[in-house]
Length: 220
Image 1 (tube, rainbow, N blue to C red):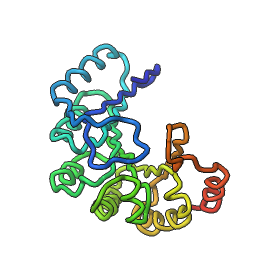
Image 2: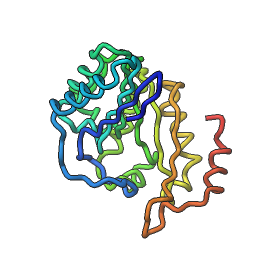
Image 3: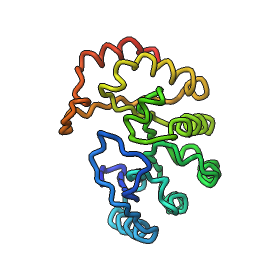
Image 4: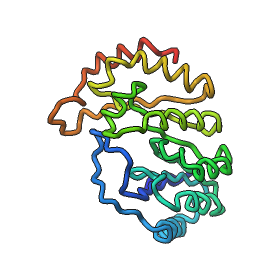
């Protein structure tokens, strides 16, 4: 919980399940899903303790929040609470391929929900190498495009490492062509996790190399 005199930010990790196993992820998956009632009761308790704060930001994350069978019922509950609530969902977007998820998404007011979407490479082989997954790249690309079309606020997140650093120039061009052409308001979050104990050393890149890539693409 992050508190300020004007707002409160609440972070709920609603599952401990993910469809990907990113090499840099620092959390352990235990295949646990927190119950809908538990999350609601925790939110009620927090709101009661902070009843004088009107502006509320709720981050729904996991591991992968779209794995939760009641994720949209939770979104609906949080948004109907009566305060000025905004929800931010951290996701890899793959499960938007399920019809029920896109149907729910279309019901959510644009200014009430935004997305922080992991997309670590535009190259399918490297995407699957980083996320330790198979057959997910095309779904991720397709449903990031759908999110672009929905015009919900979205930030793409890329964790830069030795697998994708070399192709950052191409990554920016891909983002511009495939996503920004649909919705020019998308932003990109570039992350470095060199602080993680990495026996293979693939996270320990040179900052100067990354800065060069960023400076070459500032117009994106």
